[in-house]
Image (cartoon, rainbow, N blue to C red; front, side, top):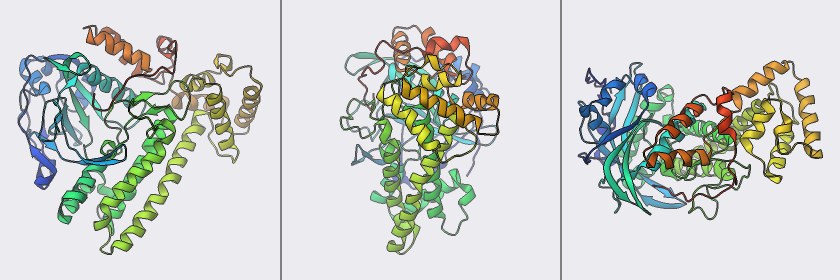
Length: 490
């Protein structure tokens, strides 16, 4: 599936395998040029890993590629079609403000999508202007790179450029374009689209392509489409468990925002939880808490059920048998998720082995955190540093009793206290992108000061380092549960 084209100076090495799918899945698209692009931030380590020369993007010609003013050699810009359940309601969607310019073949022969987000109207825009403001694009840059540093599968951010134009939202804002790097932009909603509006051969072509691109190890299985479902279930169980373990709230877990690859995708009204509360939401339109922190595993299972529905016509020729096979596969998700989460929680408490009482020990701690509204990340940070006095629960009888039980549990395992502490240091981030710190960085950037964001990115780049320089980023805002006005698609 690989056709390599190289521009020596920059290092672009494009292929366009998605464009070889049936035309129902995309619309080839001209770029929407902007007035006067300016590079705001470039991810030089990521550029290097992609085989790109970061210095080249300082030239006017290569900056034009990041701004959507120039099609690089070998690229074939297109907008992808997909559907999705948005807050439970099914809609026809598609790339309304994004252009896939091509797939970069990296030096280690990995294939990744290069997408321009905020690049203007497409055929799927549904009345929108197709543009984006600098704040949301920099937010995605900060959040996706923080997630990567935490070891959580995610799309990456290569660059953000301003366009020299303004856009109108609640106020007039500077326009910007994000260059997003992803294993692919195949979504649950892509399969829903194929099942709803495509022929069976279109659905089969999409499934074959997905297997070749993401799951070649099961491509030769006797029931390869059932294997596809099972592999996606495994990856989502692992991903959502990782979210829960660090207190990440996606905010808009629509089916079009669930990547088949198992990466976190689409950073809209997302945030990391301060005060531990399973009911925490970060989308201002999520009045019912559909996408609350504590409901994310359930929604993951719901979305996977929609994925399974889309595959029913090809899992087995007998539709009744397809239902049985898909239902059995889906039944594994809650157990897979919980096993990943429980293993991760044990690591956060320095536990190497398993005891039946571990679940109660974990739930007791979380219950106290919720009851007394204490910070999630800093609680585990203080336990890691063996500073229980820094925890807001310190001195409460129930916490003191819990702490004694935890210490006794640590003493019952063969591994040393030093080994347990190192496990905790590897599992509990000292720093996360706190909401107020992200807002502070974005506010300064909108005024032309990028230093606040640069310092934040530096602190977030090694979240498990526990350095003195990171301590300033562990403090809470005056009101740690303050409500932000955040929306999908901002």
